[in-house]
Length: 151
Image (spheres, helix red, strand yellow):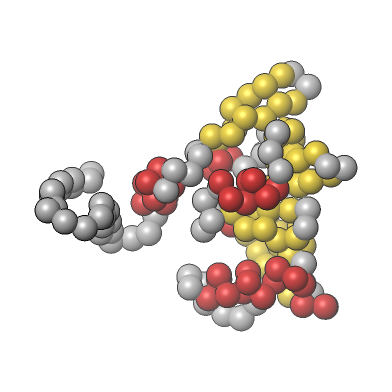
């Protein structure tokens, strides 16, 4: 249960302070809302259009200039570029891991270093993707804040 307290200031800009015991899904959702991040995305498959929840998404892939979103249920084409998705999706959840892929960090089960400074990623659904050498350094930096061990 959230305790909400409003306070009007005479000067300065608007400010939101969030106090939490644990950085959990509920806090992430609140941050996404406050930052104006979408929690839903429009996709389509052979049955027509559907609404995708961002927490359902495993990764986005660009193939032949078309972007596809992958969930446990299937693959959906989205009418956005990877660049647009990278800017719109929650940054702490979604990571650009190659020129053609954006991965949902919440769906990562296992990581393994590869030759050439790349990282093999095993997702919850059993799929493997590779974080390219170009993006691997930034990925390792992101992990330092909340994970133990060397990747």
